[in-house]
Length: 463
Image (cartoon, rainbow, N blue to C red; front, side):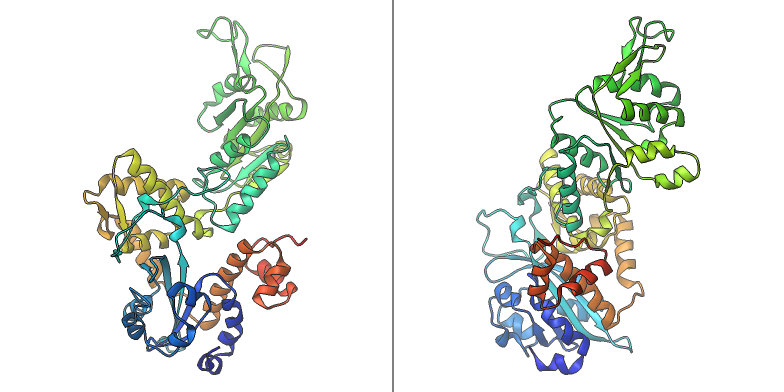
């Protein structure tokens, strides 16, 4: 451990053992760009011993070939958080973010840089010996390997969702999926069906907000001959009967009329329906999955949703987090949709690192749906083979600048807490128990549990 950091800050000193235990490479440079500490992962990523890197400026390290680009220099020049993609001596692709830490006067005192190896996202095909400092060829990346090829789950929170999906697929209980618009609730529902014993049977997706109130009952339950003028003379079966043996997915369930909620509640409780116009009951074998972006408890309080229906649906809840709460998924999602639309549109577009940085910093209020549409848009509208910052919608650039320049807490304590949360999230993915995490991070197991709770991270299960 470098003594200059120990003498400068007790807070940083207590953080160093934690930084030492993570798989990302962490550098701490001072205001002059001199390396005052780095963890052991830096030796692997940058093919140099720590002793040779300590005390050297970023310019000296670049001259030695340790870096092809310096994030620290960018942070010192711009005064703001910066992200770059570059290559190390062995051709590994690194995504590096630099974070300025300011003193009480507002001047930069330290720069903390965190590098993540993203080479695993690329193919092993032969590349040019000269790596472009500005480009990352996303259209050559491998598909993300998840339980369902359409779902990206690089983040711990989404891995938890998929673990829950796998468990619930083994039972027939009703499931209520909640989450903001665009987070992929429909995809979660389809994955749940595909992993269940009902996968060979129909999956009927019903958008409750798209069917007029006057038609929804007959659509769901069917009708008998002579019920309606101008309809099929022999009557018609409804969607519940059509899904026999399979799954009915009630999307936007909060939009379902109260009287229909009662009839669906009856299906959950008894497994029978009545076609419109008939007193004869018909048994149906379906599993019901519902989804909404609304707070159903509030809807119940406002008497816009039946409480008994809510409690019957909410037997097995799944909450899908918004994209802004799982930033680890943004990069692989960009990869996924660049690859998809390049293939569909017969293009080979790539992103420059400045454009990628803006996409990574954007908060994505429209979640995955918005990201997908933006990627399709920029591939369609960019005439050159390289998508630059100028090709992005102006609101993305404006928000990135706003997020960069916002007057946030830049104190050392705030920076430590941000780093601590990232470290814990990373360790949570790598180790099977809080005891294992505590051993690697050199703290007590109760401390790990307390800090996981502090940052809203789901603790690992201890054996």
